[in-house]
Image (cartoon, rainbow, N blue to C red; front, side, top):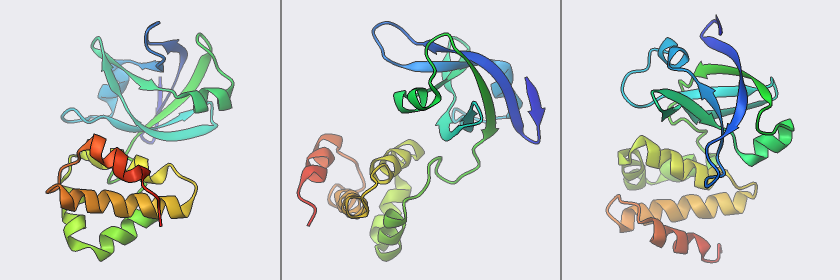
Length: 175
């Protein structure tokens, strides 16, 4: 483990959580997690793998240590499989949300004071979930539709997310 200006560099093998789950991960020791000085349960980091892919993620707890999930898209892009050694750089995620705020949602929240209050009353995890749902699409019209739908859903449900209901609302035709 090497620390340079808040960045911790180390190597670890890609592992698979279990046969029943498809999750692939990289082990992160408690020592590495502790070096960031996290308070509470939130351990958000920015990970760079093999100096190629950078993404925001959480250090997930496992048997007193931690791990980061590596999705199929990242594994395929890196050409790695279980057992391969990966070069990892971690730094503390100092961003407000732990994921980028899609411009479309920012615009909707700027124009809708009630929606803005309800969105920011959500837990940090639910905010990130909504940011992910909206931001994952390449099509700007779909991102606008999702942003408007999420905010209207929050208003209709007194600031609560009813995931099954929201899923159906998001399937409706855009315009």
